[in-house]
Image 1 (cartoon, rainbow, N blue to C red):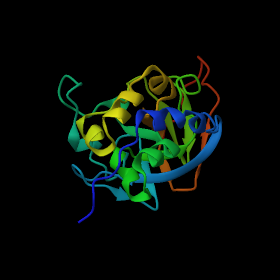
Image 2 (image 1 turned 90 degrees about the vertical axis):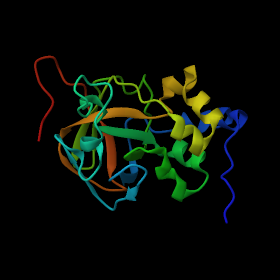
Image 3 (image 1 turned 180 degrees about the vertical axis):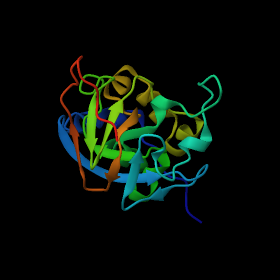
Length: 198
């Protein structure tokens, strides 16, 4: 029988901020691709397909729906969730617990509001995703897995500015993404052009 994981304290979380600020701002790497085929299930993938209609292929985003849409359909601005891997790993304490955060893409990149405002485009492997304005917040499951201090800290001013809980995105160009792939910030799209679709 294994003991319950030790949660990070507020002091530990505050002390980790300097490490978060070292994350690359323009180009980093994909650390994990995680599919959620059903409630509470996580599959760590060697490669995943991002699709403009389905999000991450095989994920339950399509079937889960959303209480924030009028008809309960999947939220178009919450198709893919992205979290900073160094913070997720720090919270988790061990590699096997990282996917419990519930996100699909874990990257080493500065996800802060200042670096990636809504509308920013990221090339992720062979795909392109767009950062959306929909906030990504914690829930009761996040508290259960990582503790009350983690929930409060990700919701603090610094936590929100750095997007420690992660960000929401939608797929604008489909493609394959694998751990180790580059994730790169793309130049802003001009007003007279539209993002590529695939």
